[in-house]
Image (cartoon, rainbow, N blue to C red; front, side):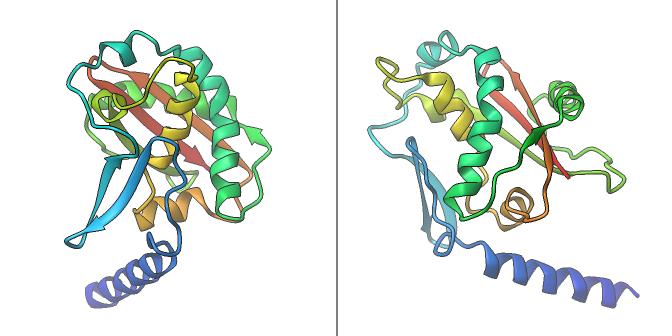
Length: 187
């Protein structure tokens, strides 16, 4: 039984990797560039360099505005890959995702969904966004777009975000001292 299960997981992993590679699904980001270097996906700033001074980012984020932009950003993300948008943000799922993101404290431990939803977790350190020139740019829009960009290059997360039969999604976001904790759920 263990061998059968291991074989099934291996086949699923290979099929996901084949379906969502950087070659077939490149990053469409205004902020980052994802490159494969030495067999690893690396995230680099599209313009400039990262800075250790994160105060200009932390002090200019309006978390409520970011939350209002997430469904639109998710639909643009799906459109970039030729998929239809979802029409409904499940407010209850978003609230539960936000509450769960507050418990993570930088760790990425998935909740027990009992197959009720799919889940993607990520942590976006402020330092990754320091190359964004905040003058004349809606930083909250950039954060909302980066919320999904962070998963490009990961076959398992891309498979969840780009499922054809998704009808609803919930978006959790939590600002910490050093970054943004992300929790996306969909079904």
